[in-house]
Structure formats: structure tokens, C-alpha cells
Image (cartoon, rainbow, N blue to C red; front, side, top):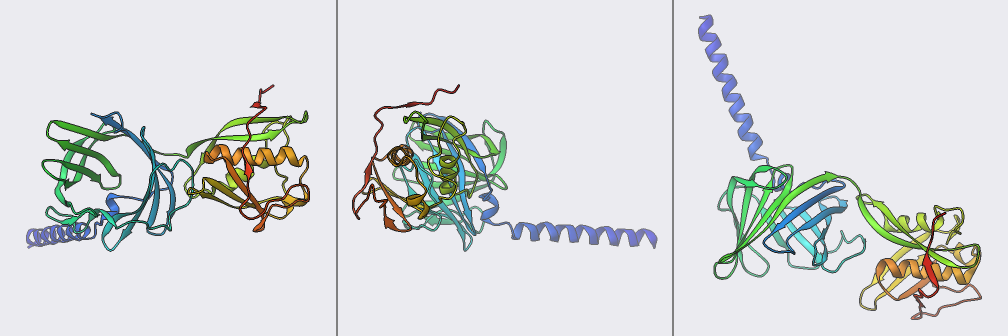
Length: 336
């Protein structure tokens, strides 16, 4: 009787275990295969094409959206990925995007669905340009320089024999792309992943006591959801060297920075204290203009205070006017 009782308990336990496993699988979502993580940096090795390597970094996270910067030898792309209604989709994309700017609320294209539920072979959909994309494998073996994985395989079938396979791993995300066209095979394979700040290379301009202007090249940590406004403000207030003069005093704050890519102009709005608490106005203005011009790679900087065009009495701008970048007689600061 006791033996029969143990058998009943064992069978019942196995049944519960089987139900639990089935239930867990049932609630696995595509987001599990494309996690949104702070400071997630992934480096990919390229094989078959010099442009296939890339590095990605999660710049911004908000709700069900992630903004990801993709840096490759050919260009820098920013894209916004959204998780909604059982789909992972790219809703915004912009190339030649070399600066930091929060675009997470943007939506500029027909949704490009990357992965879709249910997670099983045969689930299919169309790309924005009309090609078929489908889950063609589950628990597929994929080898990368980082490690070997069991992955979901998603195949996009283009015209002719051209196709691309993308591989997604639970808890890791995208680990590989393989593009095939006749005898051509191009691979982008995960090489490393870590959680660390992204390093921004920035150049800041400062006046000296000798009435000169010098610049300092600085590697600045950028963490997910950092504000580029605060990074500029912090470094323009604090030179890091006692020999250099702050560009803006502690009383001044930067309200906003806006890049107008059409006019190749940057608009910077400061607090009103900029107009009253500024010393060495000519040098300071040149440092402000050169700092923003250097980072955004533009020649024109429009400065305002509390939304009104810059007007200190000595210098003034009208709507539509701007200050021009001027790098003449400027040299790198030689540290003592």
C-alpha cells in the first residue's frame, strides 16, 4: 500500500512538472529574445565584408521602447525598437547619426517587424518592402566568437536566391546575421557583450588667463538615459585644470540643444543668467560656439536665453541669425 502511494505521488509530481514546463513555454515572449537592458554594449565581428562588423549600444530606454546606436565602419545608425502586441519591430531609423539625441518618441517608417509571436516554425510576416520573413528554426545551433547558442532562426527571403538569416537567443538578443547570395556569404557574429558606459569622444574649448582659447579632448562616459545637455553643462562649467577658465558659471544652465540637420545648425538655449553672469564675452562666445560646432560637426550655432535670441548689449542675434564656428588661433591645451 505504501509503495502504491509513493508511485501515485511520483506520477502526480511528474504531471505537475510537465504542466509547469508547458506553461513556462506558453508565456515565453519575443521580448525574452530581444531584452532591453541598461548600458548593454555588443560587439560583432564581420566576415566576408569589411563593413559587416559593428558595435551596438542601448542609448535610451522608456517603457516598451529602446533606442539603439549601431556603429559600423560605413556609418552610424540610430534606431528605435518597440515591443508591442507580440512583436519586436523597428519603428524609427536614421543614418549618419553621429551625435547623441533622444529619439525614442519618434516613429518615421512603416513598422519593420523583426520577430513575431507565436515563437514556432512557420510563423511568417512581410517586411515593409514586401519580402517574406519567417521563423525557420527553433533551438538552432549557431556558433559565434563569443560562444555557441541555441537560437531562433528568422529568414528573410529576397529576390532570386538572396536571403538573410538572423539569430536571436533568449536573454541575450540578436547574436548573428548571415546574408547569402549565390556564392557570397557575409556574416555578422557576436564577439563580445558587456554592461558598461559608452565612451564619447568630445572636444571642449576654454579661455585661458592669457586671453587665448585652447581645447581639451575628453573621453566622457555616457550611460543609458543620460542627458547630453547635462554632459555639456558639466564639462563647460568644470575645466578639469586650474589654469583654464570655465565657459559658463555655475549659475547658468543649458535648457535645450537642438540639431537642425536641414540647415546644418545647432540651436542652444541657456538660462537667462548667461546674459548677466558672463565675463570675457568674446572668448566665452567663441568657446561655446566651437564646442557645439565641433561635436555636431556644423558651422552655425544659434544661441538663445529662455527662448529669446541672444542679446547681451554687446552682442545680439536676431531670429534667423547665428554665430559662426571659428577655429583660428586655437590650439590643444598642453597639460603642465
